Image (tube, rainbow, N blue to C red; front, side, top):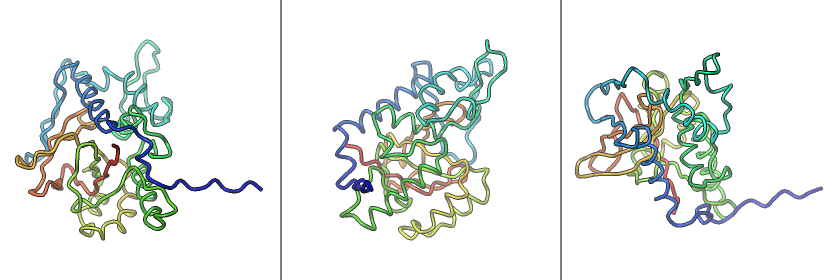
Length: 263
């Protein structure tokens, strides 16, 4: 009988070179500019009251349509998703498929794959809820046996307990998922929220996560980059409070901050 493999111990971040976090931020900025035709990319101001203005694209062709091949090759492939199951396309082989399936989660996979994150440190998946559940499971396992378990690369925090830093993820439920949003809004505050996340994630069929890229506490603004926001890679301006915590709004009912421990 083959003995089970020993559990990883130590710290997962030790596998990665100093500067990996900065490489991630640089990759995010390049992708944002790529979707802006190498110029300034799309920006959405979530600090305003009410929904942001809808995007208006030249000739009515969105960036996700123009750059569908890029989305397939860099994002969907990183999550291990097949074109057949995740993308709907025209039957005419001369026309590229339209990337009209939600691709914000695979954008996260593409970003982390691009800087060398390994599958044993992050679950690459087409659903935000799937990798968030995995992060939560790893964190709980390490908390239960810190001397026998490896400290995870990504650590979940309730919205009220961590001011996000560049490289962190902030996550919300989609506005249209009424029951899921209500569960998020009425989550217990602070660390008591950890025990209630499971129910919120069970209802999070189509959530959304963005990478934080800058924080300006003086201007009460956090800047984040994410995919599939108004059909492109978007830089969002998010309101924060005086302590730097994201403010939950109808448009983005944030409920979790994922600490990115990359060096």
